[in-house]
Length: 446
Ligand SMILES: Cc1cc2nc3c(=O)[nH]c(=O)nc-3n(C[C@H](O)[C@H](O)[C@H](O)COP(=O)(O)OP(=O)(O)OC[C@H]3O[C@@H](n4cnc5c(N)ncnc54)[C@H](O)[C@@H]3O)c2cc1C
Image: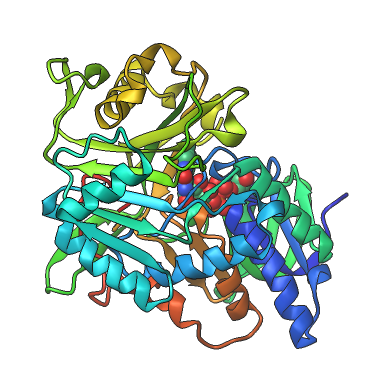
């Protein structure tokens, strides 16, 4: 299929956000009698799932100290649950545990989650230990003082989710075109009038950027600023912060000899543990070599990624800086593969928390992994118009789980004046003193 010479809505990038936006926009236009999928085209230089959406771990959770994200996740779970089979979603829940130094943060985020209708239970002290042991009887709960159980959360198979969203687009008549690379933007009166592509030009009314790690490249192509000043609520300012900072992810899989199940023989919730003052030791042995002075790990059943039983997990990403090599992407890029030390760390942390994983370093699945993401100046997503007719979804690498963003953005694109849930993520927050602050975590995702 060639590219159309003109279209009302052009979505660039067939990842989670581009596909979810196109699907929901088609439904919004149909419902309002304003058109439908025929007015929308999704362009991808490779194809659906060629970016982070195709290689994500697939965790769907709401553990954010940035409270406005809680409502975004509630919409996202509504989308996942609208067709969990087609989207590959397993609603097993999500359990997060920490030390006493995070208790106050957990209390705040638990209250906020429940305020927006995202039910979670909070346990502290002995109750937290008892709760964790009830699910995983061999859980080493030393040092753990708080646990949160998000019931609507879970995980999804990434290829299944991307295929499901692409099918939803097709069902509504949206054209999803692979092998079409946007190479430039023609401007007229400050608006994008045409997209230049490797397959010809496309006249457009509205453009949506769903470009994941490639967002910064198009930011430059649209002549937007490379650095900016950040103003915080307390009056503090940071000058000349890089607009985009790249991080590389550390994730992998471990084969297991015994099925990974809960005490009552279910698929366990996704587990996330951050112990900010507890070191990780090799193979989880108290006398083992120290691998790190703090522990941060998450894992879940390996599901889609494993050809035999196993779990899939990861840890804090590693900062690259304001420049990164975007292509080839993901597993294909030699520069950004996880080092062997990551396997030591992941298996050590898991064994330290659950003796069932002792001696599992040899079970680490040796394969190409990795993948990078573009983070915003405050590590929180930006959802906003960046030109009068260009809407940007830049999720700061949080976003496989955030299928609800496309649903909310579609309302704006179809003519609704305001969508309150998106407003805290406006680009203007940096200039207006609403930059999000640092959270009490070693990880830029919490
Ligand atoms: C290894 C890894 C694990 C992760 N795990 C999780 C997780 O467990 N849970 C979670 O919520 N998030 C996770 N993330 C983050 C999440 O995957 C991303 O935030 C999300 O998938 C980004 O989606 P997107 O639609 O913005 O971009 P992408 O999925 O990256 O899609 C962008 C698309 O744009 C296309 N494109 C680029 N340039 C052009 C161009 N010039 N013209 C046309 N098309 C173009 C690309 O081919 C690509 O398909 C993970 C990320 C990685 C890398």
